[in-house]
Image (tube, rainbow, N blue to C red; front, side, top):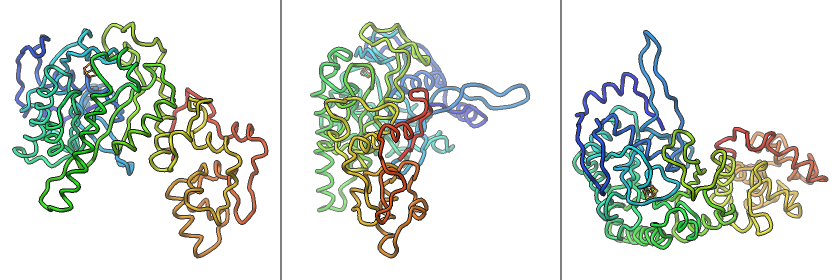
Length: 449
Ligand code: SF4
């Protein structure tokens, strides 16, 4: 998550009133920081929330040049259709009463503490938006007071943006754990999306690493959201003037690798969240060991000692999640008790195909949409194109390629009018050919499907 302090941001800091103040919130003493420093502290404190992926650089222009970049403030997030959007991603405050072992803002961490005011955040969002730095705001907070009081601050910011500043951009608000239904309702009137982070997949893990959090409370918030969303939808069908309630739905985040749960447990949980609370997205965040990548604080003895974030595992979980959301797989099909972890060397769809040779080959000229979706190398769009095209003409391997099939993968799993390109005679050979060459060290594509 970065924003660029080139000419543009120098201008933006000039128009923002730089305020120096310090006050005590939640018992923590906060330093005196100007607005630029606050952005740096409170955007840095928000960057471990995985709802946005980001990239950037840290440096400044040489002699005679102009422009520099610092690691704070703006992250890049991808919409469902693959569009990249920039969000101002910050915390309202990084003062927190909780002591979640994996979090740089936990009460026991030795870190600079600061908070925005509502007016500062409104002004910052509007000015960044007007200058095209961002397309939206992603606002969370440490729990510096009673959850309802913290949530009220987030809501006040969103409401002021909408009603006083006339801001029509995207707003994503976190639901602070313990917030009541009334405030979730209020938040949904001003925000496009709300999210309550589960963080860890089981109550046992929450008790170990985030003892003040409870699965029951977090699921309760998701349930409240889901009930309110259906109620608003129903009302809108009957009464046209009913306002929209968080039209971009709700999402959550799960940290991967901080506790011992296997991928099967994580995928099953995600599957049930999509099913039960109609979540739009579950985000997976590879656990970043404390001290790595500039994360501050003394390592917490409750955390595992791992050399670096399990990024390949995170990537495979996103692929498995994609299979559930767009390829009609259910969690139990992707992983079973006997092999509860995703293969780091194979994408989960290919791994499933190699485990189910009885399902293949799929005959392209006859197979239904569901069967086509199961073929590695054939995506949802290509499957639809195949069905559409074969109504008017017969398909060949060449035409399949033109329709978007990745034949390097699909060739082992299909027939075209009874003909094979490559028959799976030795699944181990196919596995070898389709494996990532270099396992864990590989740079993996973001949109493999
Ligand atoms: S509640 Fe936990 S995860 Fe959230 S800011 Fe506080 S310590 Fe971090």
